[in-house]
Image (cartoon, rainbow, N blue to C red; front, side):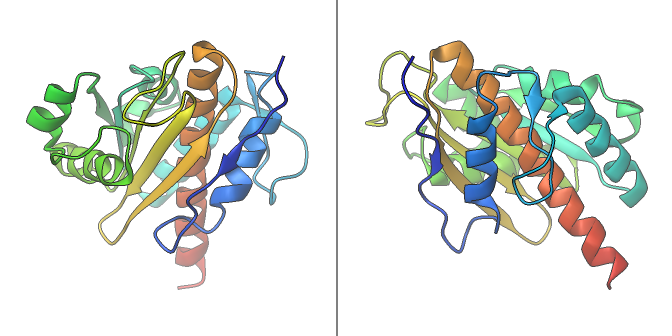
Length: 207
C-alpha cells in the first residue's frame, strides 16, 4: 500500500483558513473509512461520519442554516450522509448529482472551463446554493481514478463552499483506489461544511 501523501496544495486567500489541516486530517483516517478527525485543530479522538453529520444537523438547526450540495465524482454520497442526519427535512434543501460535463453546464451553469478546476467547483457551489435557495452549499469535482482527467492525476479533488457572502475553494490530493478517493472526498466535504458552520456559530456568538 503506498504511503499517504495527502495535501491541500492550493490554500490561497480564496480558501478556508484550515484547508491544509482538514486535508491532512482526512488523510490520517484513510484506513478507517467510518472515522473522521475531531474539530479541535487536527488532533484529538476521531468521531464517526454519522456523528459529523449529526453535528452538522445540530449547528444548522441552531443557526437556522439550510444546506445544498452539488456532486460529481461522489455521485450522491454526500447528500446521502446529510439526508440521514436528524431532522434533515428542516435544514437539508437537497442536492444535484452532475456527473456529466453537459449536466454541470446545463443545470448548474458551469462555465467552459476544465471540469476538475477551481472555477468549476466554485460555479457548482454558488449555483446549487442559488438553485435550492440555501444559505450554505458544498460542491465537489475531481478525479476518482484510476486514470487521469483534465490533466489532473487520480485523487485530485476540488471542493468549494458557498454562502451569501463568499465562495471558497480548496484543492486536495487523495491516495488510494477509486473507492478510497470517494470515501475521503465525502469526509473532506463533511469536514468543510462542519468547519463553515462552526465558524458561523462562533461569529454569531461574538457578533
